[in-house]
Length: 469
Ligand SMILES: Cc1cc2nc3c(=O)[nH]c(=O)nc-3n(C[C@H](O)[C@H](O)[C@H](O)COP(=O)(O)OP(=O)(O)OC[C@H]3O[C@@H](n4cnc5c(N)ncnc54)[C@H](O)[C@@H]3O)c2cc1C
Image 1 (cartoon, helix red, strand yellow):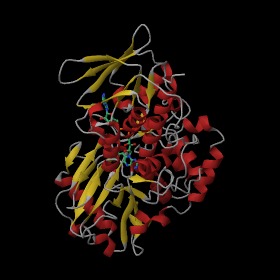
Image 2 (spheres, rainbow, N blue to C red; image 1 turned 30 degrees about the horizontal axis):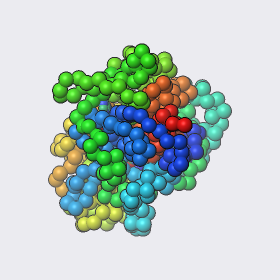
Image 3 (cartoon, rainbow, N blue to C red; image 1 turned 120 degrees about the vertical axis):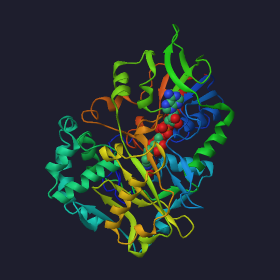
Image 4 (cartoon, rainbow, N blue to C red; image 1 turned 60 degrees about the vertical axis):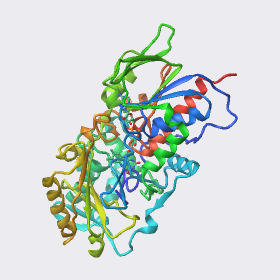
C-alpha cells in the first residue's frame, strides 16, 4: 500500500473526524453488570479489555477457533519472518491503535527508517510502466473537481466513483490509476462505491496518512497483549452468535450456536463486535432494532480484497531499483514488500486486489496459492521488474476474504447512496445493544484504527450506561 492510500494521497476520509478519546478516564463513575462481547477481533478485544479493567463481568464469544479476526499474523512464508493475512500497516495518524500499542508495550517498526533510498515505487497501467508519481500526473484537476462537487453531497453520493473518476480525470492514465486505487484501497469495484466518499478523501488533507508502521512481530503481538489483559478464560471460541432478542423487561438475550446444544444467555448489555456481513445472518427479529439500523446491517457494502503472498529466495526487486511497491490495473493490483524491516536475505511480495479481481481470485479462503495464480502474478511482476520472478521460492499463499465464513469480505465500504443514508446508522447504540468494529468507524472505516477506536467508544458507552451513582 505504501505512499498512496485511502487517507494518504487521497487525504483524510469522511469528515467525521470525531475527537478521539482513548481510554475511559480514571476516576469515572464505577460500573457493574454482565456484558457479552460478540466477536474477538481488535474491536471486541479492545472493548472487552476496557470493560474488564473497569471491573465488569465480561464474556467474549468468538465463532472461530482463532482469536484476532482479520488481524491474523502467520509465520513465514520466508523462514524467520512473519506475514499478515489481513490487516497490516498503520498510519502515523492512527492515534487509537498507536496509543493502545504504547499502553500494552507493543512496538511498531518504522518502515521509513528501514527502506532503501535507491529503490522507488512503480506503476503498470494500460500496459505501460512508469514511476508511481508519474501515474498521478494531473491529480490537481481531480482534486479541484472533488472540492467543487462536494458542494452537492447528496447528488455526489448517488453517483458511483467509477463514473465520477471518468468525468474528473484529465487523462486515460490517471483514470486507470484512480480506478486501480479504488479497487485496492476500498476493496470495491469503482462502479459500486459512492463518489462522495472518494471526493471527500481527495479533498481532505491528512499529512499523517502514510502507512509508515507495521506492528513489531505482527498484529498477533497486539492481539496476544489484549488477550492477556482480557484473560483467556473469558474468551469462548468456536461459538457463533445465532440470534438476539429482548425480554419483556427489555434485557438482551443472545442465542449461541455451538457444537453442543444452542444456548441462550441474558446480559445487562451486549456489544456486537462482528461484521454486519455475518450479523445479518443472525436472527434479529426480536431485538427491537430500528429500521435504519436493520437497513445498515443488511445493506452496508463489503470489500472483496484478496491477498497473495509470494516468497522469494532474495529480494531481487531492490537490485532492479524497485522497492516492491507497484500500482497496476492488472490482477496484480497493489504490491508491496511485506518483508521490509524483517531479517534475512529472502523476502516476500504481497499482491493485493479488490473489486471483481479480488472476488475472482482462485484458491481457498486461506491456504496455499494455486500454481496458476502464482504463475500469473509472477508474469506481471516480470513486467514491473525484469528478472525478479526468477528468484521466486515455493510456498506462496492466498487469502480470498470473500470466502472467509466469518467475515464474508475484507472490510466495509460505503456503496452508492450509502454515505448520506445508512452510514450514520452503523455506530449508535440501540437499547441494550452496542455496536463496534471497523464498519462502525467514521473517519477510519475499514482500518484496524477504526476497529480499535470503535471498541474504545463502545466501552465508554457501556460504562456510561451501567454507571453506578
Ligand atoms: C486483506 C486485508 C488487508 C487489510 N489491510 C489493512 C491494513 O494494512 N491496515 C489496516 O489498518 N487495516 C487493514 N485491514 C482491515 C483490518 O484488518 C480490519 O479493519 C480490522 O482487523 C477489523 O477488526 P474488527 O474487530 O472490526 O473485525 P474482525 O477482525 O473481523 O472481528 C470480528 C470477529 O467476529 C467474529 N464473528 C463473525 N461472525 C460471528 C458470529 N456469528 N458469532 C461470533 N463471532 C463472529 C469473527 O470471527 C471475528 O473474529 C485489512 C483487512 C484485510 C481483510
